Length: 112
Length: 111
Image 1 (spheres, rainbow over the protein chains, first blue to last red):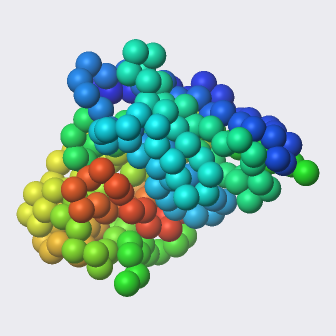
Image 2: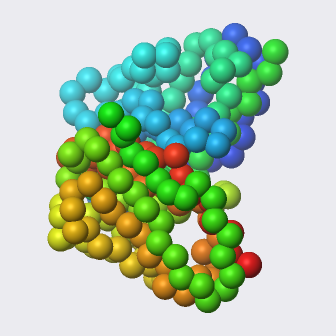
């Protein structure tokens, strides 16, 4: 069975500072990896995903994540955050086409 | 193209009552899922479907029933609501599973 660990439940950061949200997973087989974002009172939206190929994946709004197989990690980074990035971020893993396993989430709080 | 829609947005039930949470998608996706979101626990898979007529259990299926008679609809039924089922419920759909599109959620309070 797969599992996902997001060690940081909350990450406070000032606007324009860099941020890293950590995600580690456990699986005995190859995985697909995802980051989803949830803005207040909304559903989840896909931020970026790793399926195969390049281990560095990027989103359209400046986030990136790197798949590290040896460390079983998929940390999310952004070099300069904005107030509008305040949200909850979920890391997820899947081995097949359907069963996503989510982490407990990290709340990113960006202040001026 | 409405994407994934869920009704109702909010519901209050008394213990023992039954209800159906509706989910529909207009993207012709084969895969559909139900998750519940609880504070500090992330999202947990309740049931999923890989096509009309095919459903299977997820991580936390007890107390919930599903059926999939059409590609578009995937209702979630609570036969006898319990306070432990107070949660936010999300429906999701996907073409092959690797990118899931989520609905806006249903907030359920069981008294």
